[in-house]
Structures are given as C-alpha cells and as structure tokens.
Image (cartoon, rainbow, N blue to C red; front, side):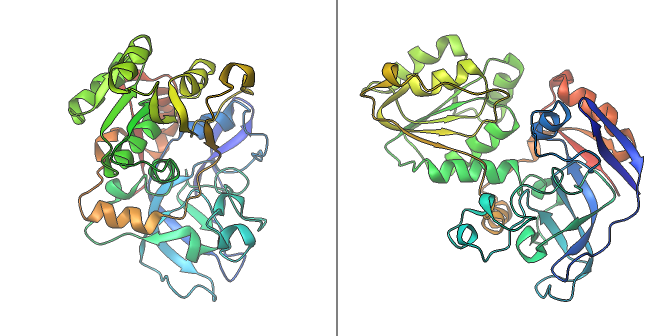
Length: 345
C-alpha cells in the first residue's frame, strides 16, 4: 500500500509498505477514505517533535471504514464508518479515568498515530484500543463533515470547554488558522457576549468575515484597541491562543483582564517565557497542553444536528498519489488554502 513516510528531518516520502496487521485483540484495521494534513505533521517534518519515530507513516486526521477488528473489540464491526481520534487511550489508567486521555500511560496512549506508530496518510491504518480510538460516524454525516472531529475540531472543543466560557464573557481568539477556526466554532456554541478573533493574514481574516459575519475580526495592530472597546475590566475575560508565535504568546496574557483564563492551544517551536514580574498582580489562570481528545461522540452528534459545520475549511483536494503537492501547497499557504483533503477511494 502507499504510505507517506517520515524519513528524516525535512524529508517525507511516499513509499510502498505492507498493509498493517492486527497486533492486539483490541486493535482494528481501518481502510482510509479521507485524510488531511495538520500543522503538527509539519512540526514532525522539521524536527520539532522529538518523540516522532523515523520510518513511521505520518498523518492523524482521517476517517475511514473498519476492515477488521480484534477479538476483544465488541462495539465495532467490519463495514462501520469511523472517525479516528488523534489520541489512542486505554480507558483504564488513572489519567483516562479522569478524562485526561492525552496522558494515557499505555505504551500506545496519547498521540501515537502518525507520531510514534504508523498513521493515516496511507491506504490502511492500524488503530490500537479501537473501542476508544474509533468513533462511529452517524449515517447523516459525510466523510467531509466528520474529517476533523478526531483532531483539530476536538482541540477546539476541548479549548472551549476548559476555558469555562460564560454568556457574560468577551472571548479573544488569537489565530484564524484551521485550529483557530475550529476553536471559534466551538466557542460560538457557548454564546459569549462578544467574540474577537485576531489574525494577521488578510486572506484568513476575509475567510472569517465571509463565513462568520457576526464575528469581529481584527489585525494584531488593532487588537489591543478592539479589546479595550469591549472590555471594561482591563482585558478579555477569556483568551485562547492558537497562533503559536512569541508575539502571540505575549499578546495572550497582556490582553487578558486580571483573573482571566488564558488557554494555550498552540504548539511552539521553541520555549516561551513567562515574565512573572511583568504580570504580577494579574492573577491569571493559565491552561495549556495537548488536547484530551475524548469528545468525538458528542462532536459528531453536534455535526449531525447541524450545530457545527467544518466543511468550508476544506479548500483543496488531492489524491494520495499527489500528497507531496498537497504538502507543498499547505506548508507555503498557497492559493488561500485552509485545509487539504487527501482522497483515498
């Protein structure tokens, strides 16, 4: 089968590999029907994910059809359409029992697929702990509509949940890339008083204005003034940082009001500094880390009800055989790309 493979820093290659086989009675084999490219894949490519294993098939955003299940998998069967979670988790360890599945202590727990074990930019993928790592897709939901439920939409859903947003809040979202847009959709479900999204790319800012006309979109230069005009208490009630630069990290805590919640979703390519003397007295609450991706069933239910729609984010499509072209487009932000669907049908 074709599989896009991490060869070395800066080098991915489309290779012919053997089809995966069941390795545990809790595994499932999934035939991939639709996948995508995530910024985290680019982080692997450029050496920013030390735990990534050379030789693995990359890719962790995908949906497909169950081909085979292990003897201990009882809730899934061959032929089921499924969303694949970015994280696999045992469901039994301390962290899983408390909903912190990103820190599952199983050897295949957390972000394994497409990082430490073979992922889904391929024709087939093995999914450990299949009953936790796979979620059936409702019949009314298309592959395109379900594509992001296991990763960037799960991230946005998690970020909105842990930010403890109320209807009295003004929420500042920094970054309108794919994860920022998914975060926006999930914040909108909370019905806060006002949402501001800060984005430096005029193309992406225009995408937000076109698809979500009720949302205030501002440039980084205009962000401070926009926050001040809506926030009488010295800053935004909730700030969600999804952009991932030195400047946006500082903006996140500077534009938060005292006692605000600042949620850091972004992955950075170098350490960030918390200048505690500068922020002394703001009494901020920081929440940060990798998504606890265990909400896929609820997310797919919301999609089926028409309350979340991420299909506008799919701006380009490529077959798996042309995935290198798709990467070049996505990495270099060409042609107004938001997300690329990789077709494998």
